Length: 351
Ligand code: SAH
Ligand code: SF4
Image (cartoon, rainbow, N blue to C red):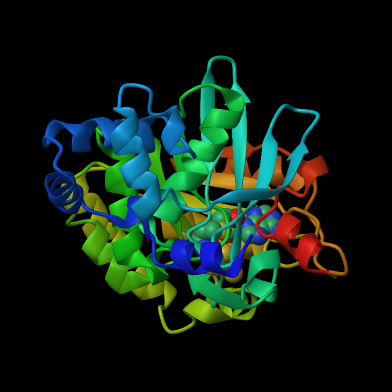
């Protein structure tokens, strides 16, 4: 590429960053009718095209005008791994070189997509590859949205649900996360029902409160991992200031305000949070709430002293929780053979 090319492309604006009104203005400036904005948006947000030439119902002259002035984002695939269970994990790179990962998990005719909300994470959970890997930056709403579209395009099917359980803490990037959820929910965008859009947080209390006031019925999951304060402080140092008592209270407010059932994520770590005292504390924390508990066997990290618990302990947790009226399931960890645990693929590519 010549220097001239580089200079002209650096002045181009990413069309994905324009609001609907800005795009309509651009159409008017270029002398095209307003409805062309909607057509272009359909190609961008519904069909995830990466080239203006793919916009077949848009006049060639407009395609040329747009490509002279705009780019179409710059997400490229750095790596892709396919698991024996059918799930696929991707490492994507944005135009500034920042990388983020996402996973597609197909079941029969449905496709669940797991996305990252930040490159890295500031919370430092000791069992999490992302938490141990430092923080680069928060992702923009369009960058989160693009992960879903990338996976959906690769599977050639629409995404039926999205979980924000990749890298990063969504509630440390609240505004962009809400924007992304709205784009995913919108019939103009991916058109996924709000209940099928799940945010997972390590427990950032002010944002849980804010989330409970959002009008849409988005789903909330909270990473609990221990209901004993000293254990939780040790394994999740980033949320020390949000105590379990306060978390319990705010979750009560959440259920009251929304009537929705929250999920607690609990990764069983052998000898750390799987003993009887931990189990009783978990029963006390969840008893009488609407909550559902998801027990996950810890994904083994290389070079970590932390190990998964046993299947027997997991089953004991389920039985004991049932005795106190709390529904719990053991979630099978998908994509184990493709480093699908939080942050592991991107870590390998940085090494
Ligand atoms: N930051 C958010 C969302 C991303 S992490 C949160 O913490 O909830 C998504 C989920 O993966 C969380 O429940 C997190 O605790 C869990 N997780 C992280 N590392 C894990 C590991 N090694 N094994 C099992 N679950 C893990
Ligand atoms: Fe961040 Fe979630 Fe990993 Fe904790 S578990 S370090 S909050 S991504």
